[in-house]
Image 1 (cartoon, rainbow, N blue to C red):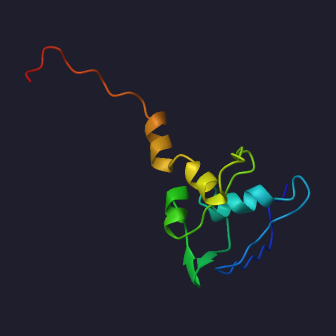
Image 2: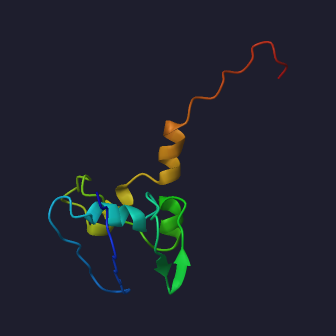
Length: 110
């Protein structure tokens, strides 16, 4: 099984890009590498000519890299920008997935 091999993608600011291919071609895998969900086994992701290794999607976002996932349902009456900002922030999702805090000890002094 080969998940991508010898990929080269150059994206320039102020331009529109589309990534197309057959099912299973690796489009989602490539994008998940670019936004920090997956880490490539080899090769480099460069931002402004400098190699980067994102720890998570918020790390990629700080470098100006994000994506709209294909599973996301868009709200038709909203603008593109409004749909992009509609997504939950990664730290909010992390908080919702965190285990609940221990209840306060009723015998503890306040």
